[in-house]
Length: 140
Image 1 (cartoon, rainbow, N blue to C red):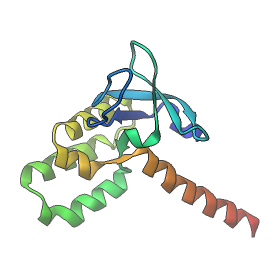
Image 2: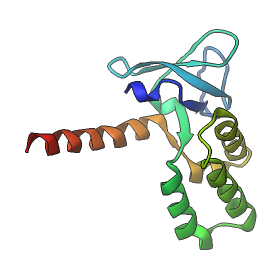
Image 3: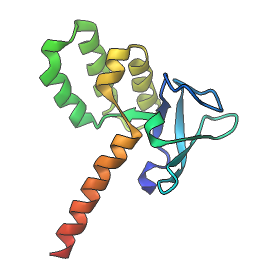
Image 4: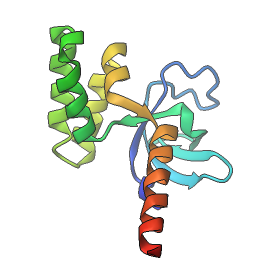
């Protein structure tokens, strides 16, 4: 899971126990230890935070988010729709400033956050499924 290193994540805003008090803040994944269920996150200053993958959020894949926006448009208000599209447009750029701006939009509204972000734990689970299928295809 080296591809996680350097990714932007958000510490879940409702995390009840956080030794470095970074709930709702954006950080960068510095270390990944899947065996011990520990992700080290840097915040630019202060100590590295150590979290389990379910305590961290990341943006959904841009294609998945776009599909979710278009299929769920009837079930959301205009402001939520606009914010989700804004997040999705920012995902066209791969730099930290656009990703960070998209995450800040998501953090401003719980409904937008719920629709645009997934836990790092879910991301890891999804990618492990993909990794397994890739391994199987190589064995043939």
